[in-house]
Length: 341
Image (cartoon, rainbow, N blue to C red):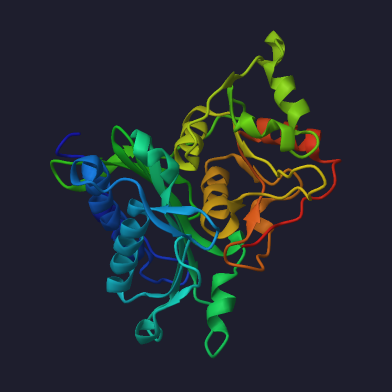
């Protein structure tokens, strides 16, 4: 990086939400939280900070040590801003209501502190996903109302990817920009401005180990992508990291499609797995702002009105033409029921 590169800190000084609020300060706090998380990830094996805690989160998933510590870092950074009233995290059973900050706190932040944490013990890529919404109300029930806003209410969303370099990608509804952490400066600097996803890609990303339990139409779509056809650019190549951040970032930059369809065993109702509020909705916002498409296969992710903060949905994200084709394969199937923890 050059010394003249635009820093994220300077870039965010001009970022305001649609009501003129200090949205840039909240985004800056998320960026500042990513720096110690990246450092902790780099030193995890050396410091003995790998493996599980022996506890599970509200989703019934085993918590990694870094899930818990990263959650604490993000909560602390956002609390210090004095601008956030409510936090919703994958690692917290209930929304965290910052009562003493509530009068000044005009924002609600939903986040997954370490997406793809099953990759941690094999030194795989992981990430942090975040979504910022405006506080909607006051009074006794405002926390529930604030925590259950649809994706269309998002003021900003994005992710941090911890890989060979640490990259932060975000949108405020006016395009998508990416910044890379310069470890010598200790700051994020502009590296991917005005990201646009190709209308059609050459790769698909899905956990094919779940093929036996996919909802109807998905297997036919994947088989279609595998068949050679020069005119349509097939066959596509399979690419799957197992971290939503890594797989979606590749899809965002190179095009193609990322899928986590509804699944279920024999006699079970098919249901989505990824969480709407802090995984699917923010990633769909980013993808759409880059010119792509975000869908469950049956409806636009952004339009879903959540009924629980840990609600799950099926996900198809990526190039417009690829997602539209996937929808045609599964669109005549039975509607997907959502599942909540």
